[in-house]
Image (cartoon, rainbow, N blue to C red; front, side):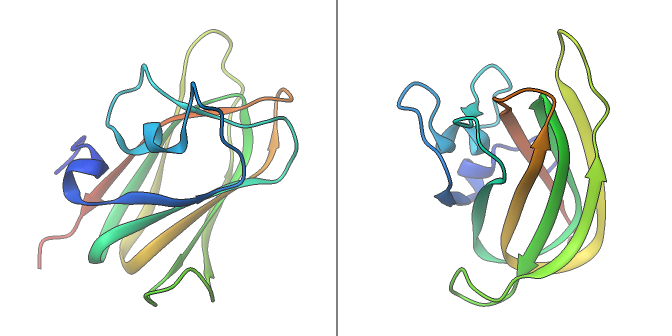
Length: 137
């Protein structure tokens, strides 16, 4: 299931703090690194991905540009409240190419994942793709 488009697995972006009609949040889940969601220049920025069914997640890979600090939270409820901290990471600045960062979630069960970008290397950041590897149960 690596590099499957999350949208083809029924995952959707249900919340995003900013939206540009040319770079909508849905681009995060289409599996294509040439399309992307772009922030509007303030921090923090966040987006929430809802899975079609509760999922046990082994890894999450974030392909982005200009993201400096990202935090991931999860929940197992049907609504987008009561999140718990999972992990966070300071991203290396990459000039001219995408950042690709993998987070080990070790089979965390989640209905939603919330991604919080608390800072960037520029006023604008972009998220090109979120890839999730599920544990087979």
